[in-house]
Image 1 (tube, rainbow, N blue to C red):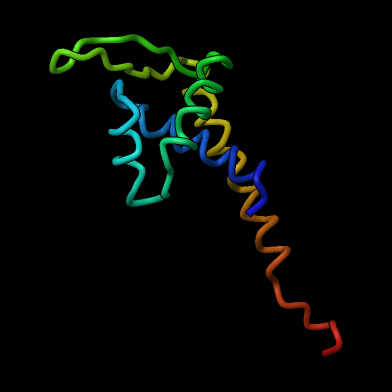
Image 2: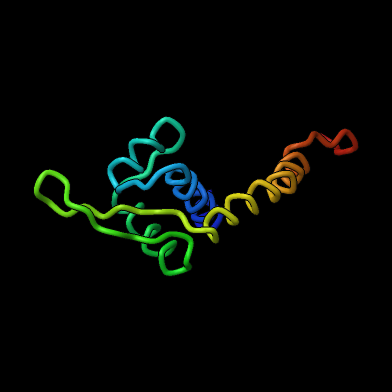
Length: 107
C-alpha cells in the first residue's frame, strides 16, 4: 500500500481509537488490533504528529507508581474523523473505477 495513503488511514484509525475516552499507547494498539496491526514504532510517531497538528492533546497521570501518557482527541481531531467519513464515498468510487471490468477491453 502506498505509504502516504496508509499514513492517512492510520492517523484516522488512531483518532477513532481514542474518540470515546482518553487512552494510552498500549491500549490504543490493543483496541486497533482486531482491525489493523500497528506497532509501537509506528504508533508513537503518529501520536506526536497528531499532537503537533492539534488533533489530540497529551497529559500524564500516575498508574501503578509510574507516569503514563494519556491521549485525548480534540475538536480538530473529531473534525478529521468526520472529514474522512465524507471523503470515503470518493475513495470507494475511485476503488470501483480501478477494479471494474472493462467489457470493451481486448483480452
